Amino acid sequence: MSARWWLLHVDLDQFVAAVELLRRPELRGRPVVVGGGGDPTQARQVVATASYEARAHGVHSGMPLRMAARRCPDAVFLPSDPPAYEAASARVMAALRSFPVRVEVYGWDEAFVGAEVDDPMALAGDLQRAVFEQTGLTCAIGVGDNKSTAKIAARFGKPGGVYQLTADNWMAVMGGRPAAELWGVGPKTTKKLTELGLHTVADVAAADPEPLLARFGTRVGTWLRLSARGGGDTEVVTEPWVARSRSRETTFPRDLTDRDQIAVEVAALARELGAGVVADGRRVTHVAVKVRFASFYTPTREMKLRDGPTTDLDVIERAALTLLEKFRLDRPIRLLGVRTDLEMTA
Image (cartoon, rainbow, N blue to C red; front, top):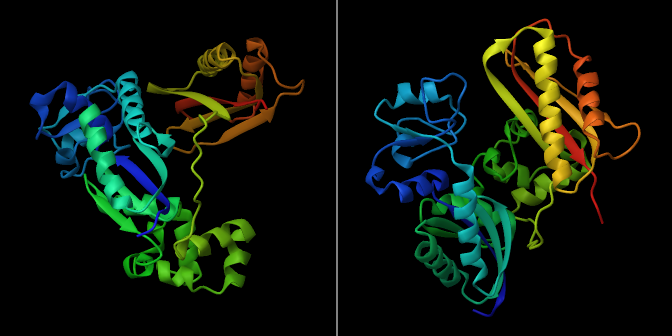
């Protein structure tokens, strides 16, 4: 096989739980749930991740800790420790970069690797061994001819395996599967595809482009057809990712009903968020406020700063409080959030 450009997707197995198990090896084999302060008796805390043993009991990310405790009463609950996960992720990425490849970090527990090799499966095995030897963590690796096929292939490799998905076997593997299994196709898109009579990947791949483009627009409709046919992006971006926005939010132990208290909380969030942005040398261009009511209805209001990008915390706070006035605060509130959009420097 001659050398050519390959994309590999490295996906760490149960990453957050695995980092905790490295620190607490006596918990191996037991159901472990990580999230919040690690206390399932506290209200409004959710699962960040669960070990495979806990997942077997139906515990999953985003589930309230209380529900997780009901589903798996024997689970060990641990508090979330983001600095430890960031440090472990950095060690993984360093292991990947020790190879003559291009690495695009895609999150704490994911990365795309681009390489011109004649045997991508051998490279995948080498990457897995290096990650394990240098970090103690295991990973699945998907091998593909673009990011989409590599990302999907990694699902078939979990946990700890390697799977190759390319133009040669794409339709045989994916054609009969639900369109929702395409990377980036969520419930709303799936519903629209179903309304068009498109249920499987093969259906979307063979679809008449006219109704598809009419329903989704040129950009999304074209992307859907390309993705369903096994196409995708092949570029690996190695430059550090620069955030276009930052946000901060708080879920309250008890619902808020007092308007003055709500305003105090929004002002505090805005100033805290703004201080972090300014400390990093960035400027704020837009401010948004999110309110989640007890019913889980979650509207958002946003505005562009009238006088342009700023580092003035008073301006950021005033904008957030101005936006708060646009909400009807006549129902109990369980969460408040503030987001700032940031000026992108050249």
